[in-house]
Image 1: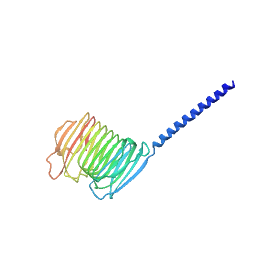
Image 2: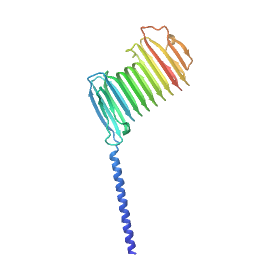
Image 3: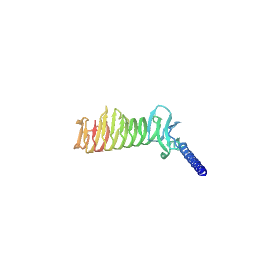
Image 4: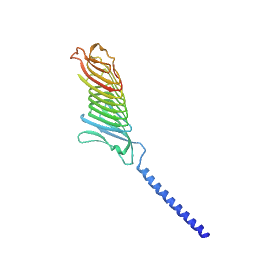
Length: 288
């Protein structure tokens, strides 16, 4: 009887030792995982002094936001706030041999990246911004060309002066307010496009704006002190085209409610010209 009791005690002790060792191993593996992963936001700042004006800029954001603002200065200031999937993953912002400024990182290694940039006005020739699951806000920028692509977030552009703007978005609004851009090309899906410019068309004699939208409204408001020669085409399916501007100076070649084609009657060569193409599906188009 005593021998059986001793055997049971020894077996219990062995099982207990096995359990303790197993728990220690699991704890070690878990702690190792915690050491590798990171859930804290890291802030990193970069600063470059600009001596030349023909620079290019490329930045991107992930599951956060991107904000770019022009200011009166000579330095580009960039702050990146990010959460890496593992410790040791870094973000770099640098200038290459061609005077291009690049924000570089592997999107597969980060949970989120938000970017806040201050740029000197007029120092950048081309600016390219890409974002995913992010909002994008651009203000007070002067450049030759701005390219902005986004998915699952709103885009807002204000006080932009450029020769060309190309912007694409999916599942988010696009808003352009008080801008002076010669050539505009907008593509959007599943949300609205709003354009408003009041007394801003000054830098160019002719303008060409093209807006293509799916499953979202297009609202355009143009208020200019000088006369504008319009060449207008607007088309929608399952919606209506509404022209609220003074129609007395427009001559229509087509006006069916869903499709409008019109241009300024007896245009003057001294006036600025705007070629405006607006297309959407399953929603309305309004021109004020």
